[in-house]
Image (tube, rainbow, N blue to C red; front, side):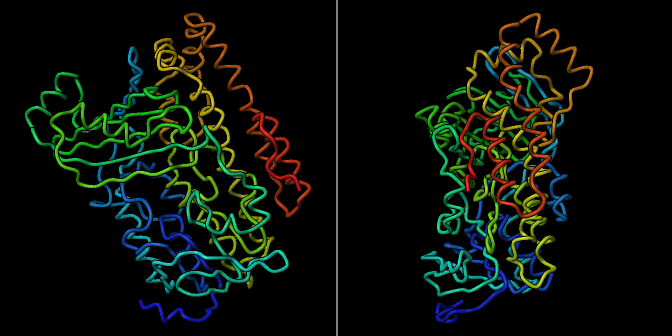
Amino acid sequence: MTASRFGSRRRFDVVIVGAGSAGSMAAYGLALRGLNVALVDGRDFGRSGSRWVNYVPPWMFDAAGLPRPESPELRATGGAFTIDAGDAQVTVENTPCQAVDMRALVARLQGLALAAGVTPVERATVLGLDVRWGRPVSLSTSRGEFGAALFIDASGMNGAVRRRVPQLERDCPSLGLGETCTAAQAVYGIADPDAARAWVEARGLSSGQTVSEVGIAGGFSIMNGSIDLTKMEIDFLTGAVVGDTDQSGVDLLKRCRERLDFTGPLEFGGSGLLPMRRPYDRLVVEGVALLGNAACQIFPAHGSGVGLGLIAASMLASHVGGGRDPGELRALWTWQAAFQREYGTLCAAYDVVRRLTQRLSREEQARMIDAGLVTPRQLERTLDQRMVLPDVRDALSFARGLTREPRLALRVVLALRPMAGVIAAYRTYPEEPSERALIEFSSRVGGLFGTPPEVRG
């Protein structure tokens, strides 16, 4: 594609900034509905989006209407998963997640989008957004100017479109300390297979079992390791909240590698900064929708946003793809409300859990596990990004934990007390366009989280 092709202003129905998984999924869905879509990214498409392994529950592909990954995009499925807090562990024998090569998933989605007629615009730096009478009309880039009825910001935390729209800039606050996570993931070969096999056997692990060390650099921090003796690969995933530690995900990744001296050469991987909070209260204004990390559509309990981004993109395409004006506020609002009522509820509930976890020491997390305040079923539901609905087993386990660790159990109860109110609030998210109703919702939710309302009018 040559720069001259976009030397003058071109008109599209939809312009999407960000050709990662969420942006490409939205482009594909909208193009299938007959819309003329431009997909813009600052990099070559072959380098867009995540370039590492992510762990996605298969039901989320189904919910997005996307066929589940197959090998080689699908690297692994199932396997044991252990949370290790030092003095105590809890294990899910068969994790509900699939290990997905994001390079392949993004390439698949981009291929589907291009086959559906989407116009690719690569190596395009966003320079400005022309907003007239409160609605954007064109996007200026280093590759030309693009007019559209709808602009979708799937550019990530940076919010290339979001920060150029006054109403969104006002109502979508920059993330502060404690609200972002620096994460890293990498796949390595194994330099000494015998040493790797001996290490796994000495610890009673199975091939491919993931061990997640928690609380090693602040309450919300992990060092995950998995050794696959069939593929002869080591998979590391690390993360820590910015502000809770001076160590980054890359620093923790280096620690993982140094501890296992049989680790071989790097095969692939990457790192990045992720939002760690519930989705923004406002996801749309007339002519603009926020998607993926630009909207903070991420699962706060462990920072995975791929599945939610795919679902949100699919929902967006279905809500705005049938009208004459895809940027019309009513259609965008119905998407916003549908997402917030179902998946915003899930994310906000687990944001309460995330806030508790950040305040716990590694020793306190071990005591919680040892006392039965954290169960395999709860861990499995969290990995699967589903709401934990307490059953009799959980109640009995918590009762035992209350006896063994009464102060810690009370602290957990008090920290999780806002959850019921949060769930109730999100299920009343305004379904019709109403600034007053959105302001009231934001005020109610902010009060539950102890933060100022995001939407103030």
